[in-house]
Length: 346
Ligand code: SAH
Image (cartoon, rainbow, N blue to C red; front, side, top):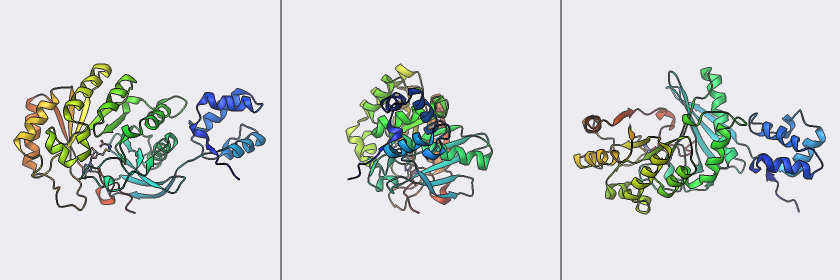
């Protein structure tokens, strides 16, 4: 019977060093292989030319590298690129490259499908199939970095965990991926250029604060009125706003890092004055800014983008209260690459 081989990237550097010692080699060999796996992002033992053929064969006998493969790449008329990323078991997730004048941002997925049930989001219609492994998150970033160099002549500058899935419901793997993305032994990117977006899993926001993470936090708020939020994001019944507020206060106290609220304004849902007032009030609890995101329709009648006037009402009220508010236009809509549109359609 063939035993299933272990994914070598699930080993820590220490474990890899120990593996070589246990197999009669030098611990240092572990460092060499670790460098191939992470900073060189190699997907094959064959690449590892500074270790002997016998060593490569031995690795092959014990391990696999469960890497991803970009199956399909679509390019939007605005320059946004969407990758359909095939995982080793055949499942597919999507990631997106978003170029601006000065930056390239990677929007990466953390789960296959999503654990949550936001009524306005296409990803929520896919059930959560499984969590992504650290290496699978890392590979999405590497792929986009390569595309950024190829198409835009510059390395990737920012990462947002705003693709498929709820990152805080795959906490350990997301943290391990970020460790490798920021480590000098990986991609060496600054954590300040990374944003993790959550729909508001309070307990895990506190855990991140305790873990003294250095990246930024975004919260998909969409309403600061409990009943409205519960209606559009049913799972939030388990994460009430007072708990979220307390978790965010804890986060700020520990990290001194401002929170970004993501907020879509919909006709008849949160385009009234009471909703504006509730948001302004909520924004006063913790230093923050607000991104008003354009709604990307997902073939559903209930949700419609609110009028320009309604959005301006938010901007005026927020600015009057010294809260920075920005309107974020959609990118990559024509290829279903915009917020909430990732649903493995192709
Ligand atoms: N689960 C995490 C990460 C996903 S981020 C989170 O909720 O934050 C994806 C962002 O796009 C979230 O802010 C989400 O609320 C928003 N979004 C989802 N569907 C959308 C749609 N149809 N139009 C615009 N934004 C949408």
